[in-house]
Length: 430
Image (cartoon, rainbow, N blue to C red; front, side, top):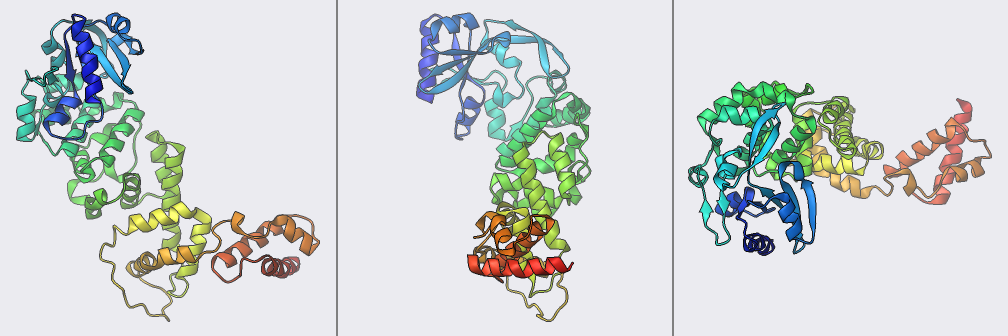
């Protein structure tokens, strides 16, 4: 990627334009972190860049940005610019192209993002970004209050950068964030969700949550979020969230939802407000549904296997497996516990531990995990019972599915049809 980007930069320079690497590439290079993408800034106008390269996408002509396709990569090339008067606390009303890279860097959010690098690797750092990185400090370029007024999204980006890069937010920057928190209501929920997702995927999601709670920033979203994260104080943050980073990124949201004690319906509402995909809505709803189902079941130790297996049938395989993986974080000390086999009910800690210790085994024992796994279908049942279809048929099939899943009935056609005939007779008596 760097080789291809250098070729683009060289081409710009040979055409008589100034050009530099800018943004996250410089920051991550200084910190010796993996580089995700490379952006360039140049004195070349968009029309100059379009004329210079054979494959160009006009991604943001209004703001001086085009994407150059080269070497199998896409590189955003933006004309040196300054920005005049922002509107809606998000976007500049007007951009003015300039010839000085320093003026271009002056408009950026944080000093660590306001560095440039030339083709020979020399760093231009007019605002002390490298020094701040070495000192472990996150600082706005110039006046923090003005930076957050220009673009309110920068406040939530501030928290993400501080958490992911292990930086302390400089006092004036933090004070300005607190003072301008209400401006977040001007930011689209989709952008808020995108930043939150990056935090949860980052290297220290727990610290991101600490900063969100401490700043109370999420109390000011465009759509009001009714979840514990907006109301917690630092002392109330569940300690289990310290273990977020031990989970795969896609399961961290499930642990947070569980820690916030959300119901499936409440989680779906909040996830919709944050514009999560339907797949993510279904994932959190099924996970919490499975969790609530287990919690509300009668926890006789001899029946937990059947309870678990029936939960798999109702909420799905993914819900069960993600529950086992996510809930293991709540019980990192999984030791065998003594369970009274004559007990009518177990304590929460007992049944959860029993399920976590045995759930994967129970899951693997299941010869059927859905209706499609049964070796008979509704037509087979109608044929053997000589009855017309009706609601009774669904009840019979569900009963057979449950018994087969709990290993009380062999998943063989003859055995299943025999049981179907028995159940059909019982249905006639009702």
